[in-house]
Image 1 (cartoon, rainbow, N blue to C red):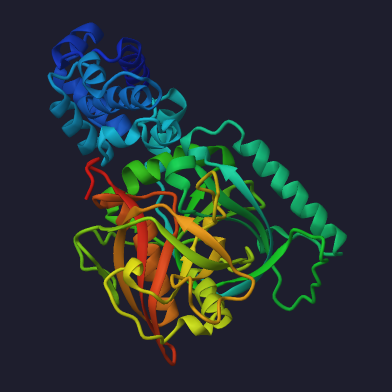
Image 2: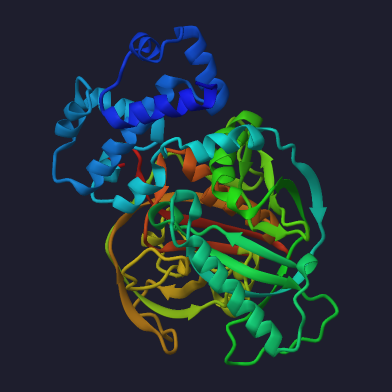
Length: 467
């Protein structure tokens, strides 16, 4: 039996007997090899120790049961071989970075965090993926014509991804053809934009896009096409032999490459481009892992959460176009649309104590934390008796919640990076995670191109405790 077949046989054996865990002695005797040889072979072909793999799979099954089952945490802990609820919670949080309390009633989230089983298909790709050396390239700023769609993540096992992806590109090619444009492979990219809700739903925004510099393009009013800019960006470019490696590559990237190279994915978009030879290029705007570094310049994050009570306010809402892909573009649009919210006298340490104007990000009354969250905004006035009242506004109520308090200052591009750091990096490695709700922008000050404001982000504690 060759090494790969032996490791596949071992992972199948572990999977078949979960949640039971076997000693290394038992497994090596069962396979007829030495403990040392088995450990080395498994690590070489998977990048994990046998213990890491079996524990991750056991905790993944426990997470699924926590999310769907009415059983108490202590019952599930004992069923999965832990001596106590405390021991289970420590192992769970060490592996997933979150308390088991937070997974109760959250089956989609449990699906997002789980460690996937090792399959022969993945293991056959692992050595090839590990051998890829990315090239570092800088793509210039460019204007694109694109068709957006919300897709389920292939990384987390969506069986519909390729079908939905193909549908998106067929629709895009049809619309481009109706405009009299020819689709050229070297001008086309698939672009991924991560959304705030991704950790709960697995949904993200994918765009079929084509560079259109120098082209005179008029988009019909009834079209779903958007026109937008992408800034100059430095990318790590990975070359895959074909598109069917994507799922395995993303697993390898997040489980092995980024931690090993101490890199992080903070900004977006991620770009994909096909080649004439049938290969696939993946462009990732990676930066050095900032876990042990200071926060980005101009960003301050409070150590304690602030509890804001139930509130009523007067709100005037708008929906921003999907063409505003960058945070800085959306902020610039809001500050230009509502200049009365900037440079106003304010006091207090929280919006609840600020009887003045502020901006809310998020949709009122939405039943789901959706990818459109950051494209909905409102100017609000907490003083219901204020004269004159906001024209065409409505009275809305917000339920009290805990908020993470951030202070930001700098130019809008600097603030853009800092906010992406908070949304896509800090929260994945902090005591808190974002939940459905409204983000507040308050105490907004503007001096030329320099801005300063406070961000209040609805979060929950990963410990499961109220803060």
